[in-house]
Image (cartoon, rainbow, N blue to C red):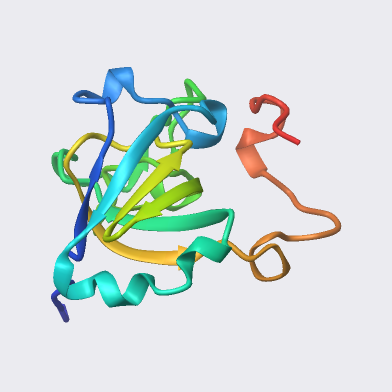
Amino acid sequence: METFTLKKIGVIRTPYAEAVAAPVQGRFEPEASGTVEVFDEFAPGLQDIEGFSHITLLYYFHQAAGEELVVKPYLDDVRHGVFATRHPRRPNHLGMTNVRLLERRGNVLAVAGVDMLDGTPLLDVKPYVPAFDRERGSVRCGWLTGKLPSTT
């Protein structure tokens, strides 16, 4: 199996030390705040980020133990394939969350809508662009249909 290495470009700071305390998804706790500390060597990559209201954080589930291909997600009592969930025990332990960008202070981004644990390794930051990221028309949510609160 081919492997490759990712660079940790920073660290995410949140009030959540344990998974049981963190929101299931950041969108369900839009005021949950934290900071994204981008390492100095990557700080030039933040140029012009202030113009975006939301950003997508890609990170490593550093406290996820092992991997499972069939999991019981937080919002259901039935097991599903891990690729049909956002469960952390994935083969590569990758996570992503859209957060609201509140402010940039040098290499530190103040954000809201966090759902990750304190000390989470940051792998990438991308701007959230509705024209690219939001699907229009008929979108299906599979087994999640009827289980999600309205977040319009």
